[in-house]
Amino acid sequence: MDQVVVKTNSLWRWIPTLYFSQGIPYVVVMTLSVIMYKNMGISNSDIALYTSWLYLPFVIKPLWSPFVDMFRTKRFWIITLELLIGSLFALVALTIPADNFFRLTLMVFWLLAFSAATHDISSDGFYMLALQQHQQAAYVGVRSMFFRLSMIAGQGGLVYLAGSLKDMTGSVTLAWSVVFVVLAGMFISLSVYHKWMLPKPDSDQSRGDPDQVLKTFFTIFAEFLKKKNVLITLCFLMLYRFGEAQLVKMAPPFLLDATSKGGLALSTQMVGIIYGSIGMVALTCGGLLGSYLISRFGLKRCLWPMALAINVPHLAYVYLSFAMPENVALIAIAVAVEQFGYGFGFTAYILYMIMVADGPNKTAHYAICTGFMALGMMLPGMFSGWLQAQLGYAHFFVWICIAAIPTFVVTSLIQVDPGFGKKTRPASSIT
Image 1 (cartoon, one colour):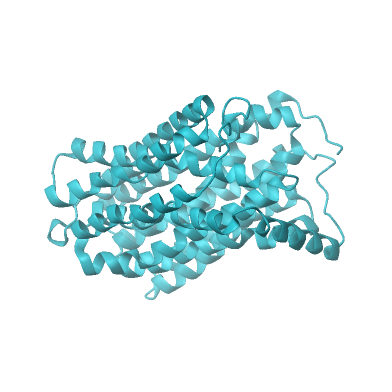
Image 2 (tube, one colour):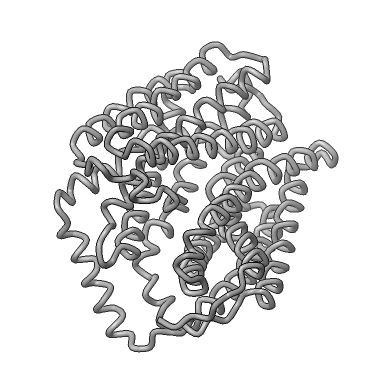
């Protein structure tokens, strides 16, 4: 395949901004929306149910990825989608003050989720087309770092900004409207910037024949379903994060809710610092340690410690919900411990998907795996709010610990190549 050889120094002009722009819309629809709705008085049941549906575009994005190949270039899609995402952020800002804001903003978040999922497809495809293979390997850490920084900026910086504006103006509505205006300006600027900075590789062309593209897609999907022990694989993808999928929807509301409701009554700014910044740094450190250990000992030896790590730290929330500590440092440590365990344990999940996808169509099969990964977060998250309302926070977190059982069952059933993940198969594949 012909490629334009891109100078190394020019890569720093667009890889960081491209992957920062990939992370922001995801964190907005998955986490920022939860905190915004909680600030604006929406019930936990409704928050969990309706925001979990926003995972759906990421579940089914492999189904429309062929259409991105068929029409126009990846570069065109990136620039256009960033302009669209910026416009949708502006639309959220306009609909927040409306009387029926919950319904209207959800509709816009749906459009944002589909746009973000399509932006993911085009960005990852462009990265592979614009860079030679050795450059892809060399810069995978850079793209991962800036994606993580976008998580910190979204869950930490933007949440802190919303809380500060709320205190300054006395208006939750105005505060969140301003946040989304900032996001709109950011993405319109990114669209203009990438219009000038993204290279134009010769290989970035539309694929042409729709019939052939669709035929190839269905063939690839059929090959995935023919993989050995595929049912066990799908169960693992769906259930490995069964407890975490429920916890992630209720953790921010628990930190924000009043003590009379069983919450910790933290300010929005403090949630941005503890959950959005400290928690995300801990998650990243856990992932880095997991990557290192798998590269040294292999996935098989690390699998069970990581399955335990993604579940046992849920006890931190059991402690917080029963003890109700007022010490902010203690709360931050508990959240960091849980997030570190999540990052550490999630590494095994990523490497398992890479192992399952290995073969002639590894890119497409990995995309299918990520679709099931998103479904595994979406379905448990949908009923988590209702369950928390029935049990209360303390007993809900006890249930989260019990929900580790399906994880341990599917972990015991999967088969892993003894040498997979060691240095002979570079751990730099993890993103």
